[in-house]
Image (cartoon, each protein chain N blue to C red):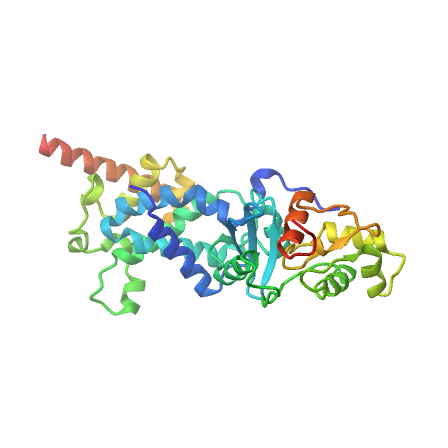
Length: 182
Length: 161
């Protein structure tokens, strides 16, 4: 006899209830592929397009008490977003990034659904108009893509430029939002 | 400069530790507790998780979780009729036999420390030093408990043969 799914789920739920987990994560299906979502008690902490083997990185940033467990609220808001029923996320976030990155990501979060901006314009917004390249690096390391919409940031000539999850996904998200024609 | 930790010293993320040991810990607890094992199993991993951020290295994690499981099982096997103060004070070796009624495995007839020692040694291949940690005893006492358990099993089997 081995561990039943019920027994396993009961343990994981008890651990979360007791508040002894540093970070929990789950792997969910989405129209842009499998996503790893991770959350602390403070809020949504990470979304990864490459869901396998992220436990070590989660442990390094948030603490070694890493446990897989459903994160219903995040799953629900993402489902609504991909269904076209949600334009803004209401999830609290737990970023834990450097100050400059936090400032840029904060500005990024203000770009409305369905619109795009450029790396240079975003740099100007944080008072560093010549830091387009640095802003690009922050986008590339965005810890919570989709929810922090780095897919809405494009090159000055309108090209998609780059995306940590791959340009196909960037295109797919912009098409979902109606920012570019499908 | 900090010395890089060898892989064996590194403490894995809890999820990996849990996946590596959950099955064998459940099998161990089923041998000790029979149908009561499920609750003890959950308590074992909750205790491990509570202490996990205070671990100083990743050596002997398997023995460590068996230690916790053994402690949980011993708590469970203590007679329930006495006050909790007396329960805590009572040595595991003096357990009443009627608390084992529902057990159904080969080692059922053994007193709990002997049963734990036999199962850890021959079922899970732990070293006597590690079994001693699990039982909270000396290495000699762990060795004695295992061999006494084996002798008792042998007598029982000869008797039945």
